[in-house]
Image (cartoon, rainbow, N blue to C red; front, side, top):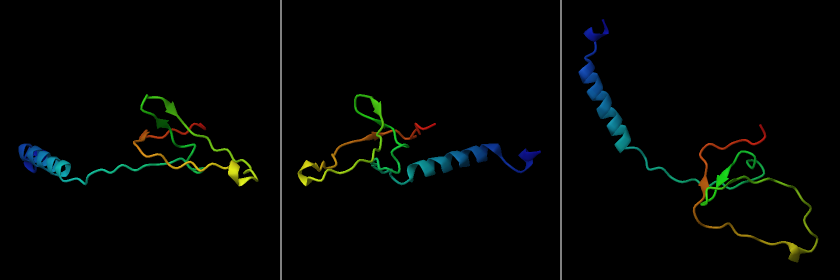
Length: 91
């Protein structure tokens, strides 16, 4: 019944051409670096170059009164392998 209205050969060729067009003309993907913050620390799971999985934990502490005891650690450059589907460890 539906074959009266749709030619399946033309439909499949049109579908293949459309999918090829979408595949070839899509925007280039960009890498988004996500750093742990107190808001998202429970939602991120990281993997290093040795395939070790780890996560960070947030702990609120009292800052020392002597400013020389506070270290400033800059953000490291390089590739970070963040797993695409973060896991919430609180469940």
